[in-house]
Length: 217
Image (tube, rainbow, N blue to C red; front, side):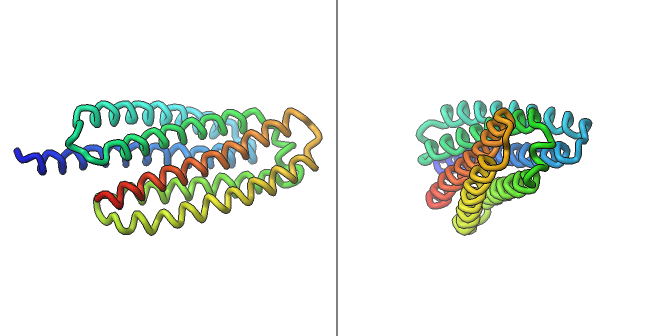
């Protein structure tokens, strides 16, 4: 088999694993949105289910990242952009960690603190934006093997969402400092919104890596 054919096969395998990784992250992000809704509504059953699925998704993403590392290592010089593939895989793995951290802190909060000052609405909006950003990453990963040019266009949408999250994060932090008297709840909310903002930054980083991959194809 020609080296060119081997490179094409290696590329397809790597992109398939990468897309699978991002798809699992998208499912976990949707469960984070479900968890947020359940906490606001007080549905314990839905909360437990969402937490379990997020933990499972985190494990799957870590396993996929390890699989990607092994496969890229075996491919060696056959894939000229292997560093960019690995960098993307590790950033996606980081996003899984952010989702778990946010979920844990949300689960520890008192619903009364959220509803006072309408922080429940703020959180739903922030989570919704970051889920949309991950959905765009999923579309970018899918487009890599079909239409790399559209990957570059989708990157602009991720950047727009990252900026919106950043703006909302600042407003919520200022409002929380003025309206939440309980220190524990204030710190938990601060950690949650900082986690969401950090996750949006990671989405931007993953988007940049996917853009570089698109330019390499």
